[in-house]
Length: 70
Image 1: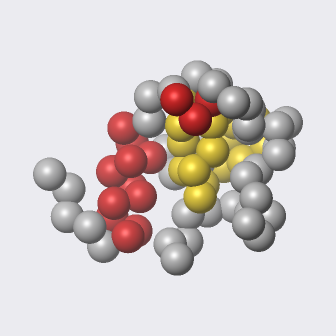
Image 2 (image 1 turned 90 degrees about the vertical axis):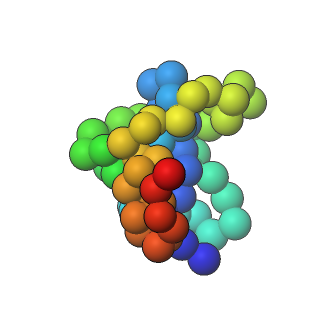
């Protein structure tokens, strides 16, 4: 498992290192600190998972996972 979790917030999918409910997504209205350095509110909606991924969170998630960036 990786140390980060994905979370839809404010129109994008972000990633966070904040404590995460085991086996569940961050509940809607949970404030999280994202890998791009923002404090955002989770919007765990059906459509939120289809939003574009934050490019800064994506790059940092790759780094944390030990995957070389393309």
